[in-house]
Length: 115
Image (cartoon, rainbow, N blue to C red):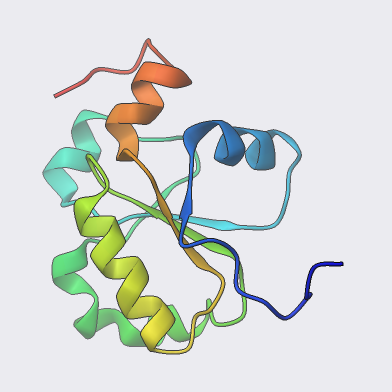
């Protein structure tokens, strides 16, 4: 039996995130790209919190403590760094979206523009 207090895997793939969103599971989807990237393409429901603003917006992050969080960026590199930071700072339920929004556009929503 799985330990209910165990952290989830560090990364989540697009299909699992889609399944969780479709099931209306409680989670916070954070886009850590910059505003200009977010303006080009976004996953519906994602909250923009650019990586460059994290330290200045720590108070907002505190409100998310204890909640399941999935972080995404363009290809998954920046969001992986953010996920590691979150986990190191008391957010054990944080996960990175493997492949980022680019993989999401390929596997889940091909109508989304790619850049």
